[in-house]
Structure formats: C-alpha cells, structure tokens
Image (cartoon, rainbow, N blue to C red; front, side, top):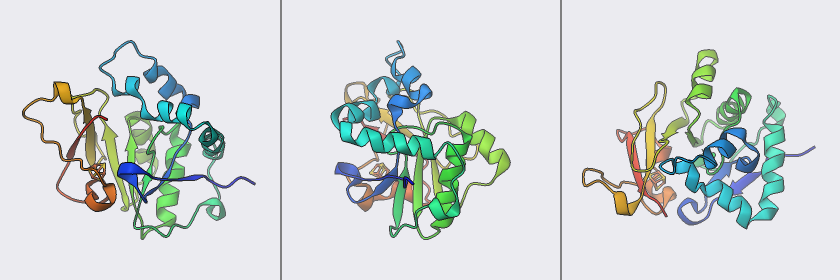
Amino acid sequence: MYKLHITMGTAKMEGIPSFNTAATKNPFCIKMNASADKSLICTNCYAVNTEKRYVNLVGALERNNDLFERILLDTELPRLNYAIARFDSFGEVHNAIHVLNYFNIARKNPETTFGFWTKRKDLIKKVLKMVSKPANVILIHSSAKKNKADRLPAGYDKVFTAHKKSDLKPSITINCSKSCNDCRLCYSHNDVVFINEIMK
Ligand code: SF4
C-alpha cells in the first residue's frame, strides 16, 4: 500500500514538510494555467514548472492524488514531528474529500501548525458547512491575480498575494521574507492578514 508522500522544502521553505499533489493532473490547475488572462498568477505556475524540472517527483505527487480521492483511514495519516508544516506548497486541492483529508491530518497532529494555501473558495465553503476548521490550520487564500490582493474570504485567516516587482504599487508593503522557518507569519495566529511577496 502506498503511503502519502511528504515533500521536504528547500530555499524559502527549507526544512518545512508539505503535502502536495500533481498540478498537471488537476483540472482546476490545468484550466487556470492555460488561461489567456496573463494577469492571473496561475499563468506563472510554480508547480507546473517544478513538475517539468523534477520528473521523478511527479509519480509521488500522482500517488498522493490517488490517495486523496478517498477519506484516508486514521492509520494512513502520518504523525509528524515538526512544529510547522504546509498543505500545498505547490499544486491545489482537487475536491472536498481532499480538503477533509488535510483537516484530518491536522487533527492527528495537534502540536503542528499547518499553513494551508488554496484558491478553491468553493471547496472550502462546502467543507466548512460540514466540519469546523481545526485550530492548528491557518487558512490562506491565494489571490487570483498578480499585484491585486483579494478580499479575505469567510472562514479564512489570511490573503497571500504575489507581486511583480515592476508593477509594485507604492502602497503595498512586502512582508514575506526569505525564510518561512524564521518568519512563520503564515504558520501562526497573528494580526497580519495580508501577506505580499515579490515574485521570483
Ligand atoms: S510571510 Fe513568512 S511564513 Fe509566509 S510565506 Fe512569506 S516567509 Fe513564509
């Protein structure tokens, strides 16, 4: 039986584990990535580019896709030994079952705080009608467009927006730093709702 693959972060996410699936097999990601609207952040998809560069990773991500299609048994959920972890450092949740599995992983690991990035407000709304968000999940809405912060959706903790340096508005404060492990703004309950980063 396959076990969930956990990706260990590098660069900004050095030392932080994350749970991911293949964006190249996610209908939402495929549609967004192919959009003619180049103001959408998905047209510069980090996940699709990563999958092209690291082809050996794709098999593991696809097996995660398959596993997250059903509600995993408690015995299949990993027990982590990390203070912080992330859901979707690349890729996106596929459906409500996928979100429920993430919440179940968080419930199994109450000592770990999970940053959960998603654009799927529709799925989150559906799931939050069924269950409450675990207290150790920081739910982060990824703004759809570059250089334009979306409003904070109901039930979310934060909004994350990527900015092209050349189009950066003077009113925007860049508060995303180079090391998540040092910063932890997205991995703790705090007063900062809007997070802005410069696109690489
Ligand atoms: S704000 Fe901090 S924790 Fe959030 S992504 Fe940027 S570096 Fe990481």
